[in-house]
Amino acid sequence: MSSHPASRQCAGNASRVRVHPVSTLEARLMGSAQPDSAAGGDHRVLGSCAWMDVYGAAASLLCVPLLTIDLCVVRMPSPPIAQVLYGVVASAFLGGLVLPLLGDRWRSGETGRPFSFVLGSIAGLMAVAGACAMLALSAWRLHSIPLGLAGVGLFAVVTAALRPIVDLARAVKTQRLHRHSQNAIFPGRFRTRMPLPPAVSITHHDGRSANGFLIGADGLIATAHHVVHGQDSVWVTLLNGDVFEGRIVARRPEWDLGLVRIEAP
Amino acid sequence: MRLGSNSRTRLGQRVNVVGWELPDARDVSYTRPGIAALLVRFMEPSVAPLSITAINEAGLGDFAVMRATGSTVVCPGYSGSALCHAWSALVLGVTCWRSYHTDESI
Image (tube, rainbow over all chains, first blue to last red; front, side):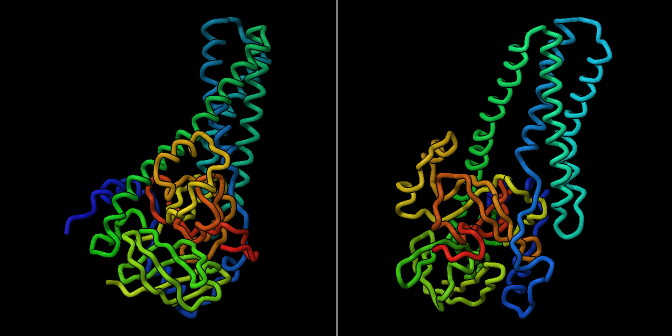
């Protein structure tokens, strides 16, 4: 059978992301294994701050036009204080771009997120310092504080405007893959390279509804535990409108995960 | 079916939720239309970008339950939806709309 066109499309991106077979999830959920004491059951809020990455990159890109103006337009000899400011700006350039990447790569232990958080925070502080240095430098060299403020403000606006555009591009791509996946609810196309899990609607017998998604061609559906809490069976509606009665086959309240199985047609 | 790894997932990262279009989602969810939400309005509301605000490590090969908000497209009924990597669309985890270990409704 030929591979799904959308799956071929995303294979290049997927190769950079570590993947796990769904059997791991199924075995851990349906088996008797208890959650790891270090990793399971606790609610941890970890991770680096993405906005610091954004402003680090923004400060880095801010260097380019202002340095160009400073070097090509003003053409003044640089005293020591200017060299110090240039050094701070260059540090912000490197910090804003390199440190977040290192924070991802140099992970410590199972999650590594505290280390990533530290590097992300350092990168963010360097970015702020670099932006302040660039503002002082441009105000001093151009003899115009408003011009320096305008440069910083303009770039902040550009950065803020880019974020939803990037989000939209990502959503459009996922949307396109989602349309492809709607044609493959259960048949053989739903294989390991399926880019998007077909969404299903889970409805309680009392009428409340939530979501789940198919993770196995045999009708296995993953959802949150609190969605199926207190239920032995639920109604499952597929994208093509077919309704099945699903059995709750596994529930892990400590992970807030649940598995529902329906009889595959 | 293969699941992605969230080992590089960080707070604030943008992911896409792939959920079921609730009948009244369009009516109740567009309370603060930003640029993205306004444009996504013309697409299916079942796929929307979200920002991760909490990660509950499940110890299932980096599979996690994540609380993700930041989009006006989805509403609490999206609990249990798949959270997908923004570019590869591999599943990173399950959406948990509510705060973990609370009794909010689905």
